[in-house]
Length: 119
Image 1 (cartoon, rainbow, N blue to C red):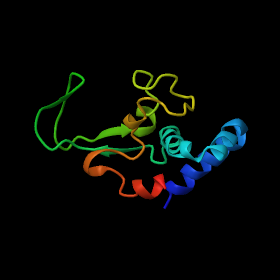
Image 2: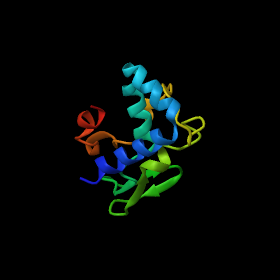
Image 3: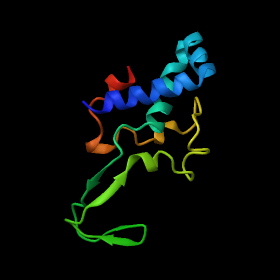
Image 4: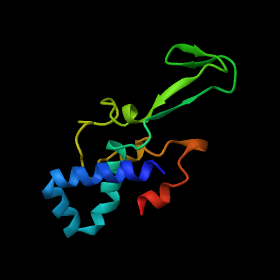
């Protein structure tokens, strides 16, 4: 139950400091889904998780990772990777590659609350 207050707090704080965006979203409710995705990218409530590989000799970025060795995945860093997101620390409504954010995780570890969060 930590994620919703963290995300909502970040959104409320941001909108209180960016009145023009707040007015834009109030005037055009159709922009809210895109805004939510960008807010989740910027204010990922979960910073990251540790995972282990499930098979021998997995190579990631030239490094061999063996089973049992934890790898830290930092979602907030991935969501601000400048090689993926242009101007990564800036809120950009309708960012063309917003579906690439890691705010809800991926695969079998994806957040089951995604639909609720997007509502």
